[in-house]
Picture (spheres, rainbow over the protein chains, first blue to last red):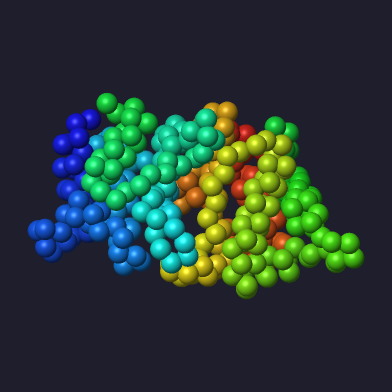
Length: 127
Length: 151
């Protein structure tokens, strides 16, 4: 999947989900401000990723995600995603080598978000 | 994996597994002369005291009990749910995700009112609710593995 296509879809999905009033309030801008603490809209960040993957794959996956904490009071900038194909029940984020069910990644800028979507699409068999 | 004939047998096995795992995980570390913990008191204390370590232990006991009940190992993720997003304030709800490492299949996948979900959620504030969680989680996993049994 082309990076530009992923970038466009991320921005489209973010506009639909978060309905920002300001034109300059883009997904890329949101990610760049990840260190806002608990005022940071983590739901918009994560839901934009999952819906972008669903849309580009043309399929509704079953998800669980959570932000990781640096300590009790601060986000680390990392998120964990678990993705399951509801038809086959396959956990697409399961890693047999590490025996982990989640993909954990840093989401502090738009390029990292594109990398993550690209990685999840590959796991789903989308080229 | 051991066979289960019906729901009653599954529940009986779930109770035995839970009590065994509770003893192994909680009571095995007691110093000499210390009274063994009562499961309901332990679960309630973890909740009322908002102790993340004890809540993690409750979740681990549930997971190990399911594995013992079904005689099969899974890869787990669990969530100790919190009533407050900004500080740890457990509300008694626990959610579990299990994956069968042999097939990579999520064995907690099911339909709820929102659609397909991978989270199996249980409120666990007593021994009875813990046994119920182990039973229902085991039943859900069996269904996902294609195993059917009576009632």
